[in-house]
Length: 437
Image 1 (cartoon, rainbow, N blue to C red):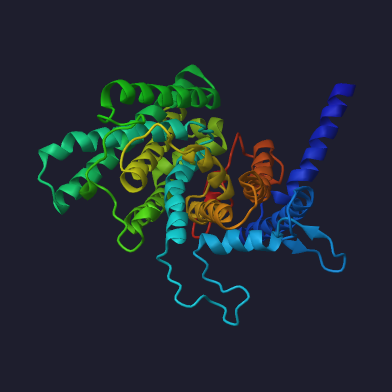
Image 2 (image 1 turned 180 degrees about the vertical axis):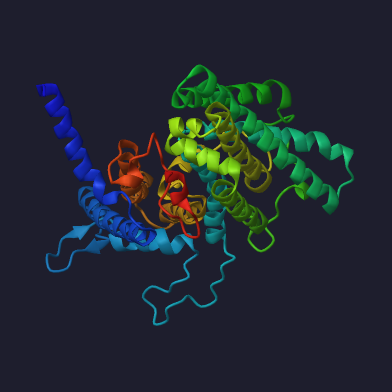
C-alpha cells in the first residue's frame, strides 16, 4: 500500500469514528441528541452573552455573577427567557407565584408572528426535503419562491376584475393563485432538474445561479411592467382583501392565518404519504439511496430527477403564494430569505416531511423571540443573531454528521447504500427501511 493510500485510509478511519455515533440511531435516540444539542447551545450562548456583556460599556450592571460579584451589561437569563417565552406571547409568569400569566391567550401578536414564520417555513422546508430524499440538493428554493410569489400576485390581480367581489370569488382566487404559484415554482425547479438529468449539470450550481436570475428578472418585470402606480417601492398592486388568507383569531398585524397553517399541515401529510406509500415516491426514494441500483430495477432515473425537482420547486412556489396571500398582500422585491432558511429546516427535520413541522416551529420561535429581545432588552441584534445561529447549528450538526455517514457508507448496512442518501431511519409511522433493498 502506498503512502497516499495509507493516508487516505487513516482519514476515512477518523471520519468513521466521528460520524458513526450519529448513524443508524432510532427516532428516540435522535430526539435525545437534539435535546442535548439545544441544551449545549444554550450553555455556550450563555457564556457568549456573559463575555459580550463584560466587554460592552454600560452605566449599571444588568446581571451580577453570584459569589464573584462581577457585573455584566447583559443578563443571559433574561435573554433566554425573552427568546423562548416572548415568542409565545409570555405565557409563563416568570418571578410571580403563579406558573402562567393571568389572562394570557394564544391568540396574541407575538405568537401570531411566530406561527406566521412557521407556516412559511413549512413549505420551503418541504421543498428542500423532497429534493434531498431524491438525492438532490436544491439550493434554488428561494428563486422558486420568488417566481411562485410573482405568478400568484399577477394571476390574482388579472382574475379579480372578472369575478364579483365576495367570499366565493375569494376562494376561487386563492385556489387559482396558489395553483399559479405551484406551476411557476415547479417550472423553475424543472429547469435545473432537466439540466441535471440530461446534461449532468450540478444542481447546486444551477439552482444557485437561477436564484439570481429569478430575483432579477422578477424585479425588472415589476419595475417596468407591473409596478403599482405611485408606489415608492418595487411592488405590484395589493391583491383584494377577500382574496387573502384572513387572520380570523389573531391580530391583523401578525400576518398569520390559521387556514394557511392548516394547509401546510395538509401538505405535510400529503407529501409524507406520497413519498412513503406510492410507487412514484418509492422511485424517488430509491433514486436518492442508490441511483444505479434503482435504474437497474427499472426506475427511470432521469425522469425521476426532473419530477423530484419539479415537485420541490412547486412546493417552494406554494410557499411564495402563501407569502403573498397571507403575509404581504402583494409581490415586493424585498422577499425574505425563506428559501435558504428552508434548507436548515429540512436538515433539522432529517428530511422527513413529518419532522418539518416541529423544525419549522423551532425556527419560528427563534425568529419571533429574536424580535422580542430587540424590543425588550439592550442586547445588540447582531448578538441575538449569533445566539439563534448557535442553537440552529448545534441542533443541525448531529443530523449533518448522520447525512455524511450515510453518504460515505459509515454505520453498517443501512449506511452502505448511499449515493447521497439523506433518508431518515424509520420515521414515526413510516417504512423508511423499504429503500434499503
